[in-house]
Image (cartoon, rainbow, N blue to C red; front, side):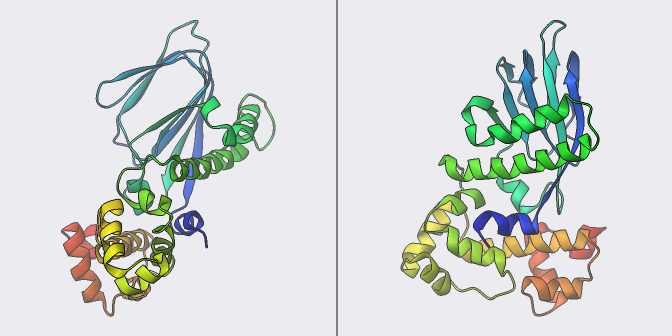
Length: 270
């Protein structure tokens, strides 16, 4: 599988459209929700207030992406001509999963800056402002497609912070990272991963830590624990989870889980 499809196979996203039409007034999101949000400003003027109290005036068609719960507010005055389409976003495994955590707190893009998404956006707006059967289901799927296209944009932007997305965007690291993502149960060694990167073992280890922010072995453990958390949410037995994510016993998984999260798998699941 490719670097992005592997991630989405593990941590897919489900969208739920909750607003489309003219917007006037205030819409507040307190950050206590368990989901992220994607707002599309099709036209008009909207004021966006972020959690750090910054205010951004949106005067052009714009995409506003919050992959995780994040406090923000949208304001529009009467006569502003604001037209919005909005959806909630739920990633498999919860908002704290490895993919959602790897994304920026927010991404604000003018629609004319993302021409690769133009056809999807045109289709979504056409559905949003037309009364046709199946409208909501189509819009939800189009929002999910937009998220995939946004992930592509992030990978190709060359402006990632250290972490998973920076590693996947790196020409030498994308293959070894995808190998770990695709087969977390394998006891990957630095030597094996460095071969996949076509680098010496020492150079690979140093480059991986600089770009991703963790040593390869630590990253593999983090990935395994994130998968374990997703499977725990789904109600899978701990013994089966341990085998799937590469631990020889439930107790071995529990020790690694506690080192990463501070609690046991059973305590984390509640």
